[in-house]
Length: 204
Ligand SMILES: [Zn+2]
Ligand SMILES: [Zn+2]
Image (cartoon, rainbow, N blue to C red):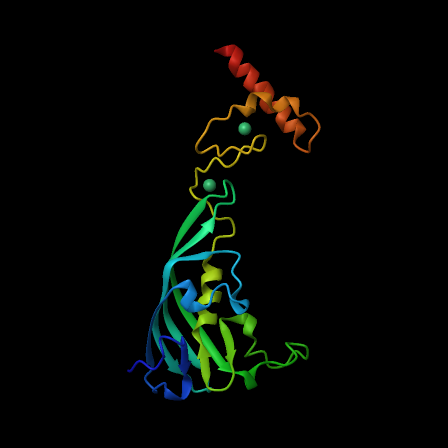
């Protein structure tokens, strides 16, 4: 095996990949990867320091290529409850296949015919010319690894819906005043919470 990728370019020159595979070992910051540029617009996460892609890229008999490896590194997300930082350590096993663009189905499954190359069935992408852009793979696989609802902690108390205080840091005391807001979509729940708050207060 030999390293064939240009670490700066983050692309692999496919004709140079030997039959027994090429070792891939990339460490790249978000800036190295071009995240935030138009091709990789990045509203969902920031690379904390760097991402690491390691593995082996080997040619397939079909003319395609298969990468088996691992994606690691840290990303910064936003907690959906308190909007604070929610860090995530990526540790994803990858098994990705690229086929020549000529093999891409032009009319996906419309004729019920050969669906063996249907990209939706597995991790299949397509490459053009003789280069593989590993930035796109890192981008996609990092996104696939993100939780739907990132949390800074499972116990995150979130922001107070009344005053906006971060309830992880301050006890704003709004719960007892919630009954004053009477006609929102949660008014029934609020009334119940207020009643419980009063009951609790009188019991003390
Ligand atoms: Zn949080
Ligand atoms: Zn509050």
